[in-house]
Amino acid sequence: MSWRWFSRGLPVLVALLAACQPVPQPFLSADPVRDHPLSRPVGQAGVLVRPVAGTPDPAAFATAMATALQRLDIAAGTQSANRASLWLSARVKATPDAGSAHYLNLRLHWFVRDQRGTLRGDHVATAHVTAGAWERADPDLLVRLAHENAAAVAPLLSDNARVKTVPPPLVVHEVLGAPGDGADSLRSALANALRRRGYTITDTITARTIVLSAVVRLTPRGKAGDDIAIAWTALAPDGATLGVVQQANRVPSGSLSGAWGRSAAQAATAAVPGIIELLGRARRLIPKT
Image 1 (cartoon, rainbow, N blue to C red):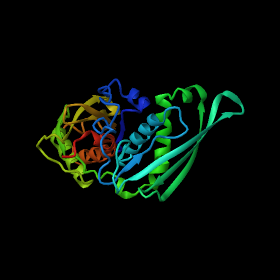
Image 2 (cartoon, rainbow, N blue to C red):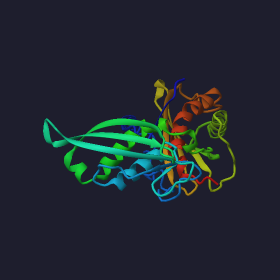
Image 3 (cartoon, one colour):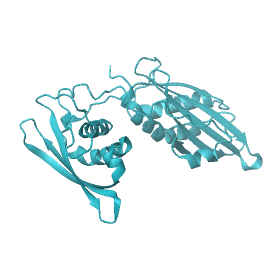
Image 4 (cartoon, rainbow, N blue to C red):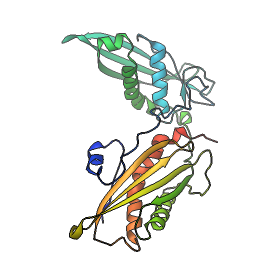
């Protein structure tokens, strides 16, 4: 039996199942670092991002870069530092594109230094941008450039700058609509599969708990078998929908009307990668304590 899973963000597969299961709900928040304002101190270590020289808005680019580093689990900020912090600075040179006056070629040179000014590493990147967007410091452009450059700069940063995250506890709440013993066997199988991946499963909902639940739909197809669809939803402690992982399979007619047996474990195991992906996107929404 081969289960396929997919999360919100793959519209072609979602469309294939639209007639037999719930439409995926969008993420409530588009900003997974909403609870980590850049104005906070970077902590015991971390990275202080300096205004980016040679840009139309040096402070805005620094803020975008700090946000991009935070998305990579690096403690970055733009306002304060201490003796353990690294300093990230950059110089950008923009030159007109030879082929079109509407475009610019950027050369971005990033420098990582400690507080004594000792160079710890540097990285050079290039980019091809529209002149108008660059000159007005278009926020979407700055976010894109920061995202691209953060991934390249991150290996230069000390492990001490990285945020140590603890996976939030999970509640596998309920499975609705499953035939046979699917409600209990799927719930138990998912809890066991997540435990094997290092997650804590609890029955108590707290300020850090993510709640998982599922809706199952079975559509008989006669001699062709039964179409089974499972939609796993992850909810933040405040009730916000973090995302939906969807699964689909065709099974022999009536095979799930009693005990699911190994089918529950196979479905749960196949769902875990998608659920972990959702948890990875959402982990900075969850309070640390």
